[in-house]
Length: 278
Image 1 (cartoon, helix red, strand yellow):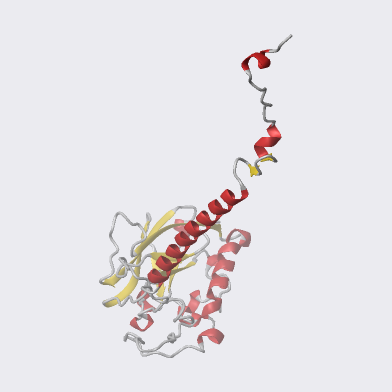
Image 2 (cartoon, helix red, strand yellow; image 1 turned 135 degrees about the vertical axis):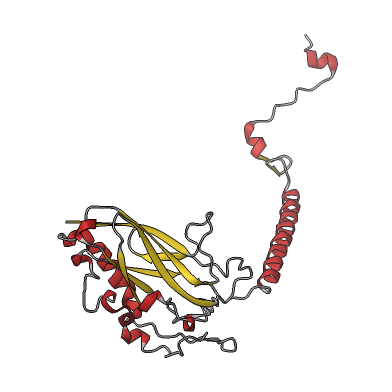
């Protein structure tokens, strides 16, 4: 008896197994391609991605040649620095009878003022007051001295609690660093309080002045020993103001620096709150 294959002359072809999909020993194909085919694909992608990497490296190199490592290329806010205070919080609430409630504030101020110690600032220059300290021709810039003793009772040298134990804390105010900034006029810090009774304040240095000799700033890399000038504001809070939340705003005045932009609450000004309890 003849089979269907005998009648049609067709041969039964065996079906490929799943192993042949990975490697076919009859054709030498691995995952559907021969070794030469895989080699050509590998060389193509090696050349393609090598070219892309080379183009990216060349582009980055060209861009870096246009940059100055000491000065940002774009400085759209050069004339309008922000103001900040040195405190662990913008809400300064404490009990004058409990040192634990103001210990963090005191420790923060003491740590921050270490860079203003006489032993550190003695290495800097004694500059001429009232004049800009221009150093455009120098590679490594010198810095003017700002000793913490300039802050008088707010220096922490006599009163280690910076006035907190008396309920009259010292707040340090400083401007943000802006490369090349040379404010015109005579900049000073002025603070006002929204309280039931007028709140008296003492400023150190006198009248909250920021001397021109601390300008301009040349950048962190070339002006390594530079420290920002500070203004200490001692809040003379009385018993009548105890247990009351007092909102205070400090502004830089007396110069061309802006302090009234409603879109930026820290441009030339800073707001914080104080509450003394007993």
